[in-house]
Each structure stands twice: as structure tokens, then as C-alpha cells.
Image (cartoon, rainbow, N blue to C red; front, side, top):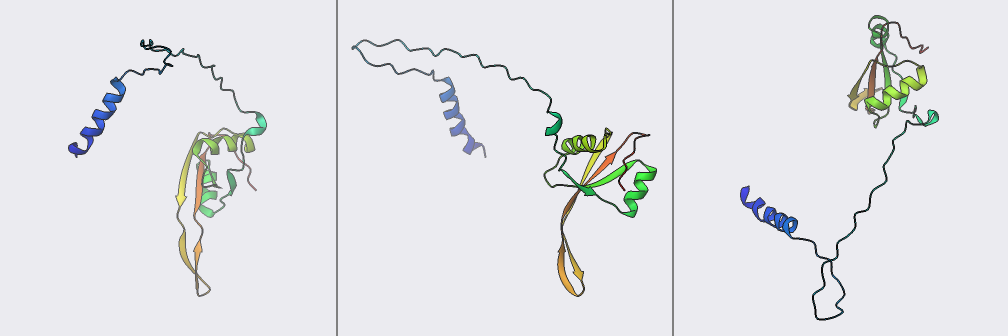
Length: 145
């Protein structure tokens, strides 16, 4: 493996070591001095908080209501939601805060794969979903139904 990397490393080092010379127009037979480029200061980028209406709440598709999810909500204060495939823990947390006015303590994500199922004698496919388990502090509640 070392043989393959040596030539490319030398080329990269030669390119980095070689000074950049600006080509000037030949006005006479004398050599022109290289022209130095002036450094332009970049404007500072200021990050601001998103506007109140710009928080995306469409990452949450629906609450995932099952017997297990109901028991977790009562005993452990953990709520289960079906979310979009592209959502992240951070976007889910922001959406929960915007929709239900509670701040999640923790968010966990579960990707459930698609399954082949037999329904009424015919094979079909159960869609893959992404679930989010939203943990809340004691005293916080989400009214789902």
C-alpha cells in the first residue's frame, strides 16, 4: 500500500512548496517583479436565532400510540412519535418544544426497517418508519388525545 501513496504525496508537496508567481505582461525584455495579491478581509457572519415562525414542526408525523407507548408515558414520562426519515434529534427536540411547549430532557431515535407481511393470503410490505422517544422532566406532560 505504501507504494501507491508515495508519488502522489511528492506531487502534493511540490505543489505546496512551489511559490505562486503572477504572470505580468511583457513590456520589455526585463523581468517583471512578481505581483502580490492583496488580502481582502471577509465580512463577519453573524448567526442569529431563527424566527418564531421558521421552526419546522412538520418533522413529527403523528404520535405512535400503542399499549407499550401508553405504559411508558404513564410510568416513565416517555412519549413516542413517528417522525420523518430525514429528521434528527435536534430538529425533533425543537419541534416538540414548538408544538407542545415543553422542553425534552432527551430524545432517542429508532429506525424500524420495512417488513414482508402476509395479509389475507397475499404478501405485502409494511413500510419502514422512524420513531422518536421523547423523554420529559418530572411534572411535564404532553396531552396527545
